[in-house]
Image (cartoon, rainbow, N blue to C red; front, side, top):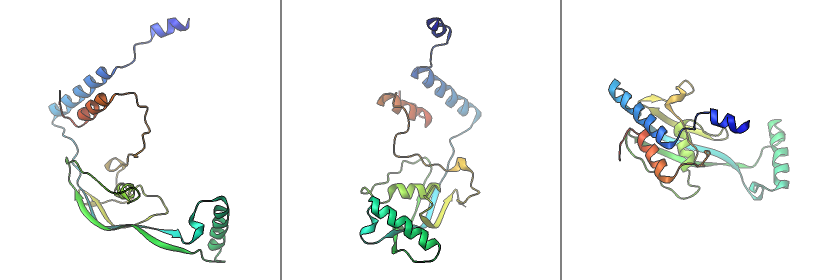
Length: 181
């Protein structure tokens, strides 16, 4: 009986079906005169900083975590002040990312590339403080900026890798509206 249900179901979409669908979608957008969205990102004097513990207690060992948690509780009740110092992860960066252009962000591991991209997208961790301006098409990014205007895609793969490298490149090409057959 289980085999019969499988026969009744339509076959799953293939990568070719997906390609044809994306091509049809691109053609309809061109026919209607709908272009790709053009967003220019500007950032002026962008600084991101945090406070870190100084000394040996910054290492994440179990005893340090217990002592640090107790000290945080004590500092909230103003019984003591934790020994922390400010560290600037990004210091006064300014620039423009133009629409429809490929942008390469290079840096050593731990140099703040991910923090920079999260700052541009407004997705920083609450423990980090952002100063300076980030603007999309001249409008400053704040809590009232529509969510479809900015996003951050993690550097870690959170998808099921079922496509080949060629299929991934074709998919990206179709999404960008190019045709490199």
